[in-house]
Length: 204
Image 1 (cartoon, rainbow, N blue to C red):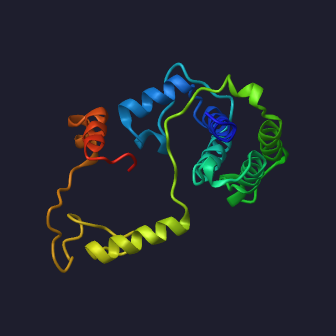
Image 2: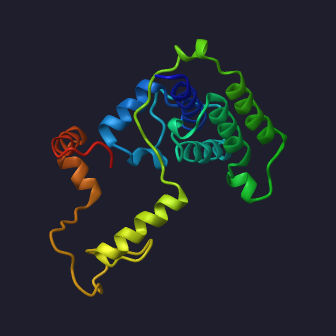
């Protein structure tokens, strides 16, 4: 990996360890067995531990989401990426912020993370394990995607869809709907990835 990818990956690792207590190996296992669903708040596995309070865990989870809205190649230089990561850490809002209850400890957590980002060097990169690819859409990207969905399938932004919404003017053709839990149970993630790969689809 190039330096920008190392730095971005290291920042993601920091969030994951401070929010969920996962190691890289545990994270890869979760991706392989549960796909993306676990990231929204799974119970910690028995071997995982974290000394961070639930409010801080949520803060780091929010930081991680914001980190993953951008990709390292979006930035011209390593310093540009480093500055962006620091701004994300300083501006992310957790539950304590929403309640106007942020404390000195909260600011210390943010500053420790910023210090880690500032001091991260290429020499330290070799100790960073790769992570599975994941990126959240930005607000602008979501708006463009919902516009395309609305034009093609007549679905309003963030509204229910087929088959829940029975009041659609016409039912969409060539579409099947599955309960996600049963689908994941009967169709292993690896099988779905191979199907996409054969169709030339690299990212979903």
